Image (cartoon, rainbow, N blue to C red; front, side, top):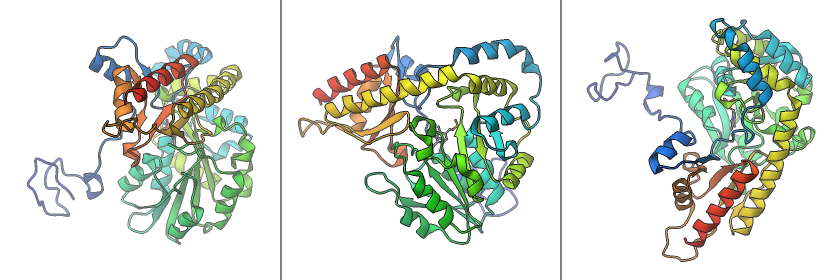
Length: 392
Ligand SMILES: *Cc1c(COP(=O)(O)O)cnc(C)c1O
């Protein structure tokens, strides 16, 4: 047991609780999640009228008008609990992907599904969870919160996946392996054959969780995703989200497609109404809105190409991306005395009202990630970045 700051140092471990604020040892080292900065924060800090946020991979087209209509139309339902288990929504998701509805579990963002998978599968002190380093921070946070060992192996220098390194960490006590594809923050997206090989190579008791939050941006899902073939892989779970291409980040809606029995257990332990009634209605409307999705994918793919070209032309090193963001290393400073680099560019962009994502929290202080915005936002970002780097 660890005590909070107000309790006496060196509090005895074990029960009884030293103070009402004492917490489990797993919780002591926790720092708050590092999100992208918010528009309001930067508007207030620098007294700006207009702020562009390209930090959290949100949809550049905003919220679909069809979804807005559904939300207004259904606002009167806010007093009701959603139907337990969200059967209409899970049926619609299942139909969208051509998978059985029993395999689908909806959650309060795919973050909730990640949390549930770890807690349902992994026994503290017995099992471990394996991922690459860096990886999406929620895998590690929820694993540590569960008191379960978290093992990581570094990505290759070019941010591709070192599968041998990953397999070397796996043993009979590995409950879950997390892989993100396309990866965050690099945008790297391995061929589907690699995942096939991994799924087959893992011990049969180990669940492979492929987080496909960005998969629909890759341009050719059958070349990169196993989702259409889950019946071939009894140890495979796939995560998707409404936060990115569907434009519903603020409503919190994601889902997992899981082996049937595991899906059943997740539904049993999930807090009953974690997917609220308006999120459910928005999700249903978003799934039916092919026009908005097609436009999102087009704008994203064109914007990604524009950012890649533009940053490359400015002398940055841009990593190839299949997602709705690109990771890059800023151009080397023109004068050796100047404090160039990622931190400088990030801060100077902020002053000009453009928020991108520093990658210090991923352990990558020399790199930055910028989300694909609207054509105007991308152009404004490239113009400002060019000016800043010219004066570095
Ligand atoms: C954005 C993102 C998610 C989605 O999270 P939600 O909880 O559904 O908003 C999941 N995984 C990765 C790697 C992400 O970047």
